[in-house]
Image (cartoon, rainbow, N blue to C red):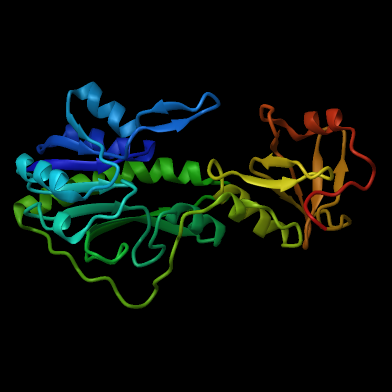
Length: 310
């Protein structure tokens, strides 16, 4: 089949690679426009765009995938199907109807669980033990379309969102290719999602990644891992500045009040609403990430110092 691949971030690249190696032809790529990033705020192409250009594939990167000009570009390509992985923009009805076999989305959850932009992060934060990926036909609703296929993946005890997404992006790429093969062969039918078990996974903002030390240690642990690498968990220091937090480790120590710091020779503990956590890497504003013990030695914290707003 002639395919238009729609995707933007790095986790979408394995799917593009798998499609390039498949029996199908990727005739063009749809991605988000170049965006400013990094300390220098340089204009950077998306990982998907970089890979497509390296392969010599035509790239479409409109500010919004709509309008007569964009619609004409799609029709010119004469695509049979449009696989989608984390593209990052909603598609209008007139666009959805262009490919003969529709837009086939690879979503990183077992639908109808965790519909939305951040399914992997929310699964970890919620303490799920199993997640997975689904392929489904896009319709007007948000991740509500009928499902072609699924796979499952165990969430490991120390998984960050980045770890889990790395595994799902590779396994999901294989699922996407198998789905498109079956669509072309006429051996698969999309099944409507059940009405039960629906949950939502909206995009996480920095405010969502702020640690509340009044919560139990296992809740803090899940939040930090679920927000790693993005948007990045954080807390406030006694002087009001932010301290970025890498993954922490729950501890059975229970003598510390919520947010209270205990600096040891080779570790830094923080009290929670149930137990404590051992800090891993931390990142003060404007500095590189470092081991918590190294940070604490240079921070000259007063005895009894606490993190977070009390």
